[in-house]
Length: 164
Image 1: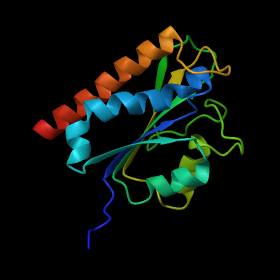
Image 2: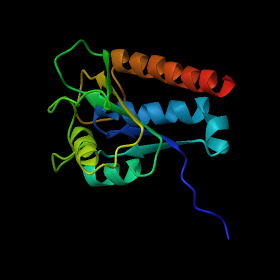
Image 3: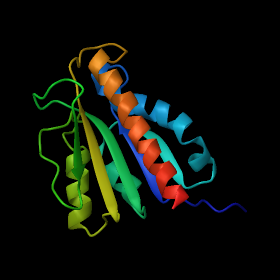
Image 4: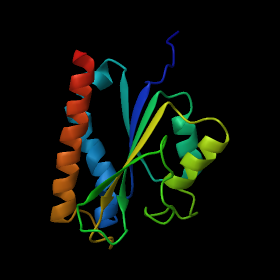
């Protein structure tokens, strides 16, 4: 019988590929699956796409050491700007992210997990400012560039950590 053990680190790309820049999280998953292939194969990291449904995200966080969320934001900042939130140090601002249909997404899931004492040791949100949230596939140029740069930084962090 095989043991169904979860990786201690999960990277969750939140969003909808059919919502233009809302697909930033799923696009990041595509890149990270290649960049972190060795970590994934060794069972240290899991990379998954999520729609942003809050109850599912709470379950995803359960029992993890580190959770990294990557999601599109709509805060009025310059398209492609990446905001970083360490949920252990600060709340994620309400209204920053594109919401699930039930208005219970990443920010709300993190706060519920915090209030229930279910927070992993480290939860980080990378919020990439979008430009176009219309219907269709494909990221705007500034968002695509931000996704590529962010994924490079995230994967470089794993390389550095595994060399320590």
